[in-house]
Length: 131
Ligand SMILES: [Zn+2]
Image (tube, rainbow, N blue to C red):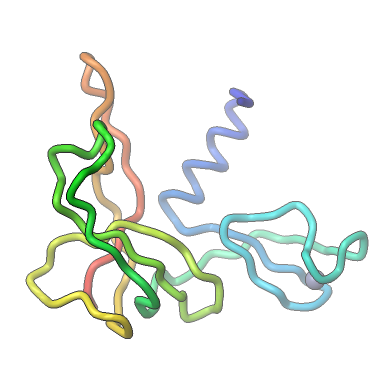
């Protein structure tokens, strides 16, 4: 795994701000970001693209038996969200009182993801809430 600060920053930027990319050659949008466009190959002209975080749930599941890092959150919902700009992304759905359904409108929010280790290092990430 690459440990450079630039790589770390890219990951943080993408997690915090939903930054993916756009191929300026054909207009295709990707999240997470790619180095080469799937359609254009060597003709790719990739630039950074920030997504609104608004979209629609296209699939979801409820997790009752989570990995250790999320055991305090269970049960919780994981959804595939089709962003308004096109790409689909996976994310946790935060408890917001409404009923999660296929077709529900959601927006991305910035939330605590998990706490790691004895030092309590907190990781943040985008999640989705019903809009
Ligand atoms: Zn392209």
